[in-house]
Length: 299
Length: 260
Image (tube, rainbow over all chains, first blue to last red; front, top):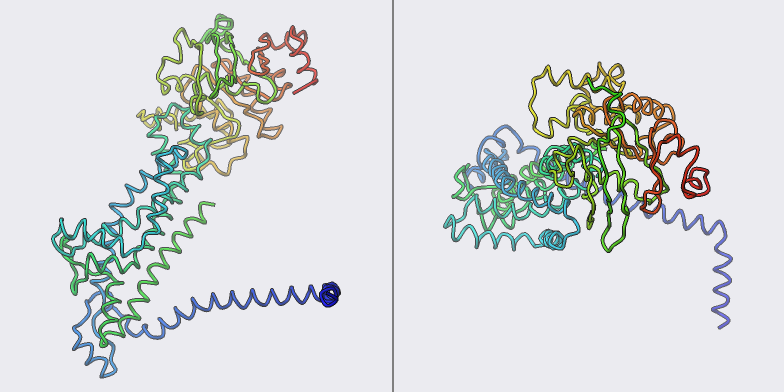
């Protein structure tokens, strides 16, 4: 009992200004150390990729497809860079994202407009909840769904279309929510101004709400695109991969993350992993920066 | 143009027994009837929550944007009941200016003035458009200030200029009636007095109904005044008479600052 009281007294004494300052300093140092750790992680990743991959980045990297494993082995054995590149993956990724965007952007924006215009209706709340749940569905599950819906009945085999549908399902909830949020930022007074001019309702949305929130909509779309650009799992079950450039939606196609996975599985191709990853990260980074820049311009 | 003398006493609009309720029988406006004279400024006064904005919005049916609203009675504009007109046509005849200036931020000054036509898909020759823009901006005394920057966006304009731009956007449609919902409450005194001068000028061509919090503003520029209290129209008379010899004790109490 006495001990406890004594401890209490000492603690009271220690809570003097000096003790508080020491606590403050310890906390400050901890914050600095941990934030440095977080930042250094990003620089370590980018540094490692650059050091390991810069050699592979040349014109051929963007214009040719990857060589066969024997050529790659010979090049590596002679200490040369692996000839060829990942043009099939780059074009494949862009193609997939285009297909996904064509499906997901109009659909998502219409739903987003509905949600922001009728935000309190029961049906709108239900859709909003479902969109939130959809964001949490593991991407491999979406891959399986696209496999069942598209690969099996429609294209009777792995296809770019199936990959596009899988990515569209992943983009949809992101677009819905970002559209809703950016439309909600438009002040009601602007809507009223348009309505007071006798503007029909659809034109209020089309000519006032959407243009006013345009930058928000675009940055939402870019974020959704950059999110699905790195998806690998659903693509494995749908678009499979293709050693050549393919524009046929009903045939398998390639994508950068798929190529990274394939290079990883082939000991002779390992050097191409790093450069492909640099490309993927750079692409996503640029999309993110553009979207941040547009978002900042809005304010 | 219009023979002002002859028209001064003709009612352009008559409000007949209007009652407006929100949800479960909460009446915001109770049995209001009034005749609005053409080419006059009618001020609606009253303390907060007395239903004056709701009444004003009922005149171009903007109040229908609120949820669970129901309206009884009728408002006749040139003999037609506005509640039987398509809202789009009605709102082209009865323009509205809001409390806070709300020009469209994505449009240029020029396009803001012509926005009513653009948003309604009315096509015109460029010359016609130019005329409407210039006339409307001259009418609100903004032309000289913006004529060199017509095609840039209006966000560098001051609050008062923005409000005059909104007024120009409203009169570009040549409406019969202009409704103003406390149009100067967000403005400084100099901008306020400019807008007030404008309204006096504009009543030659339009009929103006304005809600105001500011009694002295009503006294300065309005021809007729309504005093509303708890949803009722307590008194409606010539402004001069109301401010000198109000008939209802509640009006007198409000005007002398005993409440509100």
